[in-house]
Image 1: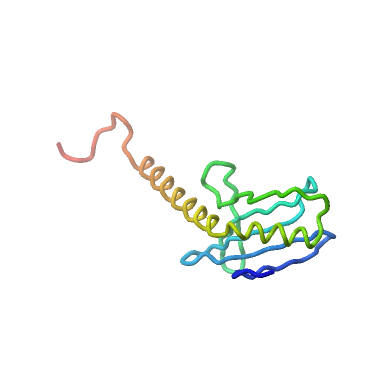
Image 2 (image 1 turned 45 degrees about the vertical axis):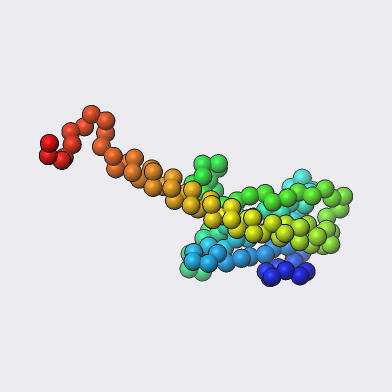
Length: 136
């Protein structure tokens, strides 16, 4: 598998899985692009960002709120059988969009920082009709 990123292909519990991990410079985060068989029997490629906390990695689910870590379904190609070859081919196809994914990851966290800033500003704003602490 030729790519500028290192990919591992493994078989566990009878299922093939390809994973590429990309360190996100200037952050304590990594982008994982993982391709494997999903619960419906299809091949799926998913991109997720994990925070590195010491020796551990964590991923916070946002459930559509924009507050969690980045997660996106990259592709679900049609496939009759899930084999090592079909997983590797689908993974290579998913890696073709890595630059767009990296841009989407950056945008996700910029939007999240903006949202957090707005929420913090709102929380610190005086209540409507409250007396101001500033002299008149």
